[in-house]
Amino acid sequence: MAVHPLVHSALDSYAQTWVSASSWRPHKRLAENIRYFREHASPDDCLVIAGDVSQVAETLRGLDMSRIFLAGDMQQDQLNALYRRSSHLIHLAWLDHCPNVVVDARAAGCRIVCSSSGGTEEVAGNNAIVVEEDEWDLSPLDLYSPPRLDFSRQRQGSFHHVNDMLDVAEKYIAELRGILR
Image (tube, rainbow, N blue to C red; front, side, top):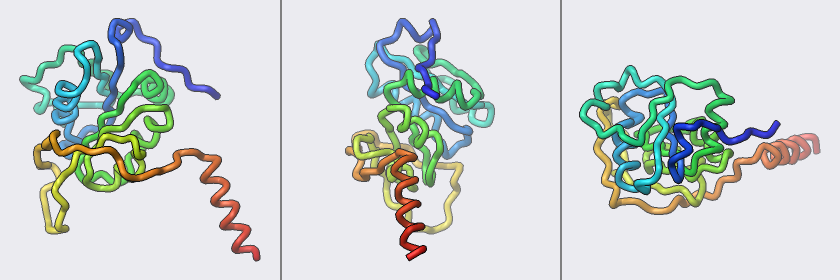
């Protein structure tokens, strides 16, 4: 079943739609995602934030929210349609491992903006925009107090990752054939 891009009149007056989606908690860095959008998107673009922001609502106080839409929780089919409409997904979470939102948005054609911490970059693709962070030394830390990002420390993604179920299925078949021999 084909997923069609989201149709919404509020977004039609913008050149491009960017998206940021999460189960929002402090280490997902909502304010940093908004700051990245403000500093890097065209003034003709908008940002849609999907997911419940109640746990991080304090971080939104005082931020310029023009051109930003809070969509709240969305059903998966609505979220996939939003990804199909969007040019970029901003996911600057700290120490995130393999976020489904990145996998889904990339499959829908979004260019991913992520941080170098955790494993997000590994599924974001080699055309991702990666904001470099200091390497974590594995010492105890407060996950909900992430460091501020320096957007001047960005580079292109370095992992070529095929995000295709047919490719994955072929790899499983090859492995199973190897086991049977």
